[in-house]
Length: 94
Image (cartoon, rainbow, N blue to C red; front, side):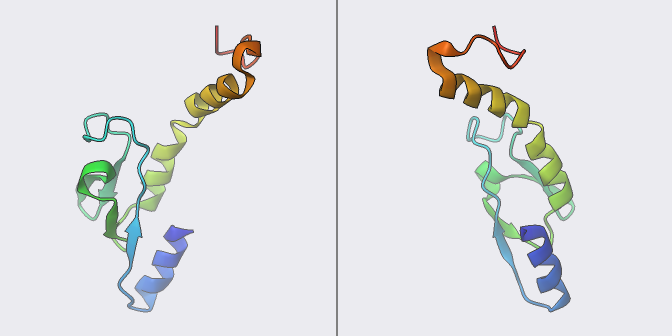
């Protein structure tokens, strides 16, 4: 949604600040989970942000990066929800 709002506000000449709430792994930028491209620079939302000029954020790259963690997050949620009854039904846990 932010991507398309920023496209519209850029066309209309409206300055737009976005908040790129990072996946918080270590909060120092060392893990790279919150890395994103802002203009010609690489930024880390946990250290350099989370607010950035929305017209400079590469939203496609940011969305692709966020998808990398979905599988692991899904497995953790299953294990949390099923507790002691989780016996590896997801095929990934032991």
